[in-house]
Length: 270
Ligand SMILES: NC(=O)c1ccc[n+]([C@@H]2O[C@H](COP(=O)([O-])OP(=O)(O)OC[C@H]3O[C@@H](n4cnc5c(N)ncnc54)[C@H](O)[C@@H]3O)[C@@H](O)[C@H]2O)c1
Image (cartoon, rainbow, N blue to C red):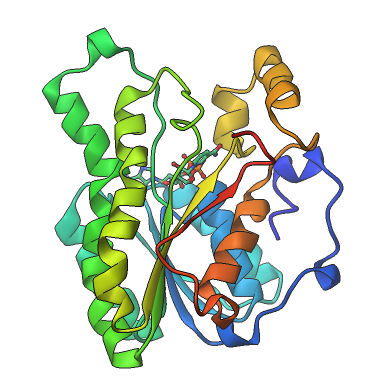
């Protein structure tokens, strides 16, 4: 999984046969937002490898097509995907409905999409703030609204919301992103009780600093390398599949009584 990505070269891969397989995920329908690259692509690949039926949306057609081609070449079913800008809620909900028509009611939703563009406090306008919220916060609730009727029909479901340890570690340079990401736990805990009555679980997975292509291209420099060594308890760099493994667990029946919680995967940073 994702060992073909440049990030994979950062660490010796763990052989697939040493990692868990989840029979409960076989043929389960899963929807991922922002699944075309980065952690989302790692999550899409991880579910595909478990034999799940995966659908995703992304704005980046090139990466999304490359991911699908890569999975197909590996002998896995090609995921369903559509180009969609999640700032457009009607488009997002339309895509989820079309994907469900193809793949069946979704038992798993992974709210992954986000954009951690940097911005200075002085430069933020109301329009920019709204636009950041439109990517980093708003899609999750509306995606949940779309999948819950199907989960109700199935009699169970698992929603996994991607949070962040960045704001918890007082990361700077992205206050609008921090506002949105700190609200993820509120969404998780604010819905857990009503969804739980219908055996729909909802949890937050909060990554530490994960070496996606974007992170390495834009933000990882010599200072960052030193910070990783200083802040993480574990010396190795984090990869998308480290987050995907936690997401798989929470999506599976192995996590049947886990809900309303935040699970951090940050190599001990926070
Ligand atoms: N990488 C990290 O170190 C890190 C740390 C903490 C939290 N996270 C969280 O993990 C999740 C994934 O992060 P990532 O680093 O893989 O992000 P990324 O930027 O690498 O990937 C995000 C994906 O979303 C897509 N996307 C962006 N804007 C979109 C839009 N308007 N409509 C549809 N798709 C859009 C991108 O094309 C991309 O495929 C996010 O929720 C992020 O907040 C990541």
